[in-house]
Length: 77
View (cartoon, rainbow, N blue to C red):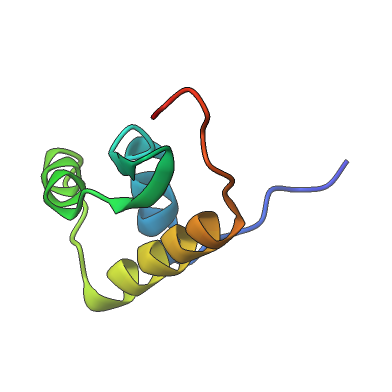
């Protein structure tokens, strides 16, 4: 059995925040247009996660990956 990867504190914070903000996507015509960053900031504050520039860049990279690989949601329009 493989051990879970060890994450640096910033990666751990970014991953924790990423998992918690999956209900905060903005959607237009069934296509994700990005995370609601005001909501992301509020969730970060609630979880006592400092939204540092590196943590923000990790989140934006994950967000970009999802948006580039998402297909329109037929039920969302």
